[in-house]
Image (cartoon, rainbow, N blue to C red):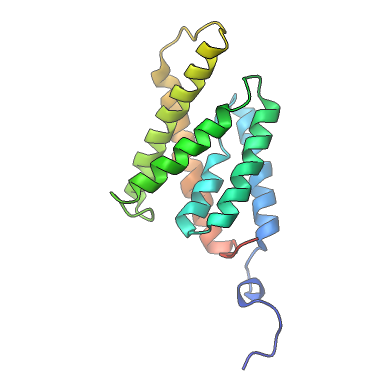
Length: 168
């Protein structure tokens, strides 16, 4: 018999409440995005929710991340929506090939996501008739791939150790 009215996942010792965890994640991701010169550090948060099967949390977080990225960027509205829609479709298709918990999934999906972000950004730049990027995309894709891999795997590790595995 349980005497406490608290939810078991919130009363475990050492667990961080979900609201605090995701607020800290947002602050660190925005800070890293600013210091890296615009690399995306927000997407791994949605991917952690998708890996954990928390579809509702992934939905509201995706909406919040789109608002943050669309509000802070100088490209036309809709670039982030296209990126996150593609990310969701690629995630659903990729999880049939590999188990999302597999480290190889994180490595390969991070590469796919880095290439997808380059395609979306390059398309948006050409639609807006901005000057095209003159350098090779491979160095940018490699940096974004490393950022996704390291931040996603690190945040997932910390989330599973100290974050709450429930919904907000």
